[in-house]
Length: 405
Image (cartoon, rainbow, N blue to C red; front, side, top):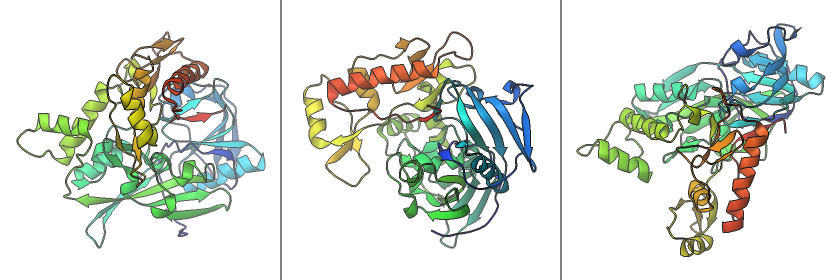
């Protein structure tokens, strides 16, 4: 692990870190989705140059649009802000939650009774390495789609299949974000973070991040310890797009039967696929009021897969587990959910399964902004999980981070 004290600016990220704060910082005026929803009478405290707001609604800061308020809220636009805000929380023994893009979490109906630190560092730098690779250094709060766009502009391969994923750059290493045959772990060069225990900024190599399927040290053994502030990606200029995911392969062949598609064309195909499943944020689309895929695709043994296939009318798809163990395979959670009796559009109160993708739970609600409660979302998730476990002996694991429960 390399220590490097260097300030870097970036914006909005959901790392899913919760726990007690440690060190110090400052923040500017609140911006983003909740700016128009902030209560005008919300109390404001100042600690040095740090603006700390009280009782700020969190629902407008999430893609789900669900959840209660933050007892305290601060926007951190620099590493100094992170230092000051975490010190403020530590001095008052307040729980701390680090919020980014808000695309992968469920906030409790009661909200969060602590300090929500909204990471708002912005910026992307690029440079060519001695090996001819393109290094993108993205501040943690930089919208992820901006990173993909800059890679495509430079004709650099490595993240084209990750186009259309909501959230921020800083959230990508936490969950080892992946889709359509790519994972960020394959192109991450380094991750800079603030260590809440040691009160210092540190830098990890990719090997030190402990990446596996939808996992890293940041959401497993070190959950709650680090706040990501910058991610360095190592991309391949002039590289070919990744076309190993069957659905993407078929779509690319249909769109370009006589030639190989470019990186930008593959990214556009991915976005079309995501939109067809309600997995692309589109204003006014009720299927977009979700946290994306709600359950992880289970990794199971070959023996269990053969048992499931033998007693099912339709054989499920399966993929390499990505663990290096040939005795393990990954099976689609969406298939398990459908086989357990749940159809697209199934609803429980204001919560529902997306009308376009079984793997997404949506805030259906009675009004234009939804209206489902977090309790309803978790009740539906529990009903689905119990049915899958009863039929297949597989316990589905939720992807979103739970906040305030």
